[in-house]
Length: 187
Image (cartoon, rainbow, N blue to C red; front, top):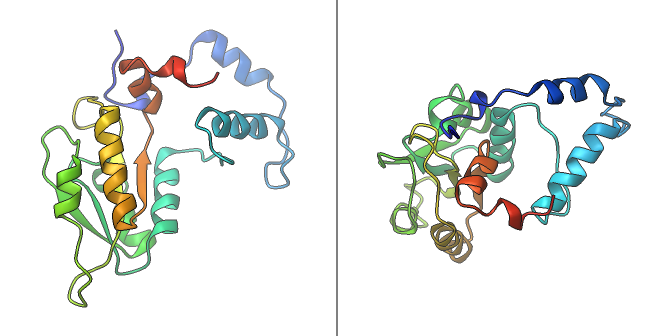
């Protein structure tokens, strides 16, 4: 049975542990770690991106992304159930100085209408909506996944509104397996 609640539920097999002990290592700061370099190249290729960067935790990855897309005083739209809101130690406020617009959804999945109606107008009295953050799969939603159609609709709202879209993809491979789209990503 596949359990999509959390990325931490998946433990490495014995073969994976053996491989971890035998990989070649180097200094990542100087770009000399062949394993990290290969991982970054593979991830970039799989998702058709120019490049990728290895981060040792999903929280670190999320907090870097939020910080890149926001300025102090900005606002991030996310689900009240989102990992970035519930489990990252107030990182949005502490690391980026941004506030959060929480959308109530029992399963943690937003829809494009939620996003559209929660974007602040250009008004000196309101924080600038600077980022929309989704989580796929939804941890507190029991591992439910977005449909590709809804992700595209949300992306279109963000593009039209000139607001970046961030995906907390800690369980992205779980979502791809569940939606049977994993074979569409190059291996």
